[in-house]
Length: 190
Image 1 (tube, rainbow, N blue to C red):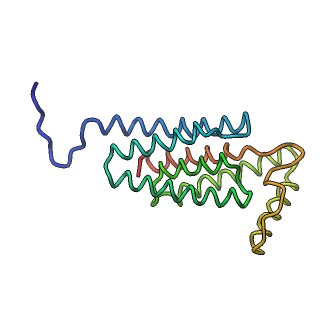
Image 2: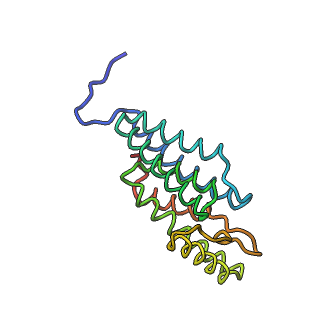
Image 3: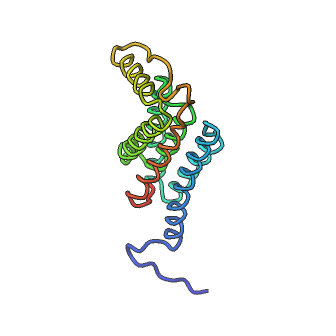
């Protein structure tokens, strides 16, 4: 068996297939989270843990700097997700989904990922509220939460989107925003 010489700067043979795997795996993960949240109003732990582990493993294969960036992104996203959960702005599954996305993004790309996820999530929540004819209640709920946080008090209830029409599955917007971010930034790990 002949050994092919390595050309300086050339990528190893397994890298293109790993990049393709990452490019396909992340959208499937985010789409699954959004679909499950839409159907059951929850994003299960098995999915968020699997998504985070997949990102960490693929990053580890890419090398220590990639793995560390992925780990930092996971930690920072988990902190932000938990803060939003404790402020009653997100459900626990949404917070854990954000942490898993942080592992795919890494620390340096995390702000842009959050911008897409939260922006698309907000637009989707407004569209859902308008369609369900509960836009006024959703805006009042959002104002209550923001007002409570701005006045250094506990956020008020109800949850954003929690109305007589039900609770908005925010994971749908988060998942769609994450997919858009992933595709626009070139489907690459940190």
